[in-house]
Image (cartoon, rainbow, N blue to C red; front, top):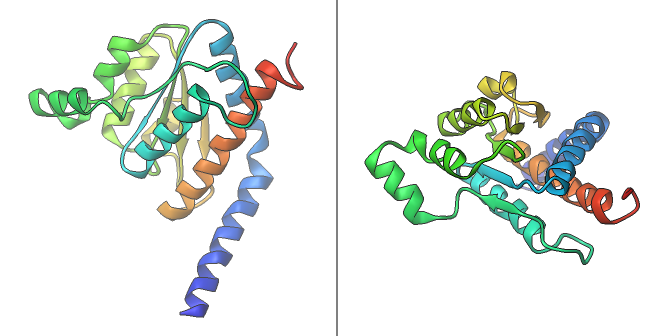
Length: 193
């Protein structure tokens, strides 16, 4: 088992090294877009399924509460948390509509949507991104593998450099933490104008 665990760590390190080598430009672009959204009075809506739903909630909490620095709360919403909305839409319509209806109801053209899907093909995420595009919202996508259907829908797409769902999710949360810190620095810290 020691060898098995060591192999997992080696895969994690290889994925992280590829992430470090490739990610900086897209993470800076995403952070700049989110900061501009907040500065313009917009909000950030984040969503995904399973582990990606947990990531959406985690990221929203970092913006609403704080990441590292003390600063005012920032308007971010995880569209994965309201069980009454999720279950009523899933029951009355279908599970694939749980995010599109929320984006349609809550979104404005100054807002940013952030869809997370390790495959890039989660239908409920893809439908919500299409709705955001129709409403002229900026679209951020977090995927892995080849980007799936999300690849052509996003203004900015971060693809975790892996085929393994666990490695994709590990890189996603690392990238999200970098974005949280950059947004804070753009708005309130060393890069503020």
